[in-house]
Amino acid sequence: MSKLLNISIVLYRTPESEWQPLVKELQRSRSVNRIYLIDNSPEPLPEQELSAVSGQRSVVTYRHPGKNLGYGTAHNIAIRETIYDEIPFHLVMNSDVQVSAEAIDHLLDVMQANGTIGLLQPRIVDVNGELQYLAKLLPTPADLMRRILFGKFGHNSARNAHFELRDLDHSRPINVPYLSGCFMLLRTEALLKSGLFDERFFMYPEDIDLTRRIHRDFLTLYYPSETIVHAHRQASYHSLRMLWIHATNMIRYFNKWGWFFDSERRMFNSILLTKQETI
Image (cartoon, rainbow, N blue to C red; front, side, top):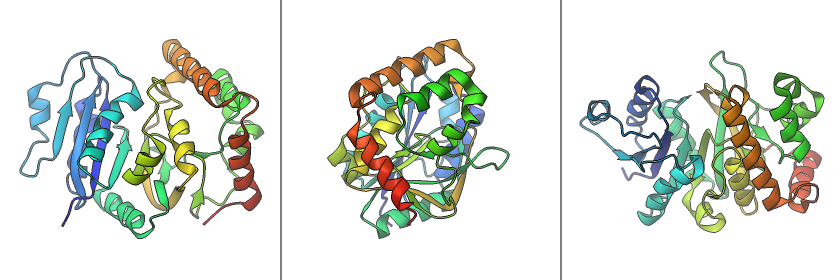
């Protein structure tokens, strides 16, 4: 069977107990052509850690840039190879995700059956099985500042529930303009049209930026028929340095798209809320 999918995972001082089981599971997929490990850590992985995933059907390619490039820039290394090799699909994912090979294959079957889907994301739960509301509206500055500055209080507000689309029926597919970067199943054709991750963002808003660009021409679909588990560390809520990185990159995002006057944001959000666009 032809291999239709490349996968990229970005590491940064990631324990082998986290990424190795994931890579071994992904290798079971009937669809995977290559798994890229892009390691932003200061030092490369020891050879014995890599050898643990280089079995009879090794499809792992390891890249060590020698410095921390950031999330989107690191994934772009692998995405460019996907485009060059004319692989039709690319999966961007976190190392703290748990997903079965069968789920990967099913999600890819859905993408193949519907050429209007540019980006697909399954239902995502935390380690306790609670739904993570990662299909969202495009944020306003107030949405992001509330979450960054007020932590749990911001997350529990009525305005945040609106931003996270908590009133929509999450048992059905929804075409949304913002999907999380923890798991993005991408159509290469959509990337060729919209562009790759914007490398001006070190991390955090690169998923918002990419989703909305793809959303212009394709469905960017929350698809709850498959479920994955995401540990979701939320580093910016526990580290002043990461909080600063988060805030700085969100300023760059709003400088790019507009702070209070963003006509595309208003249009995409209005269409979703008006049509209650479940599919």
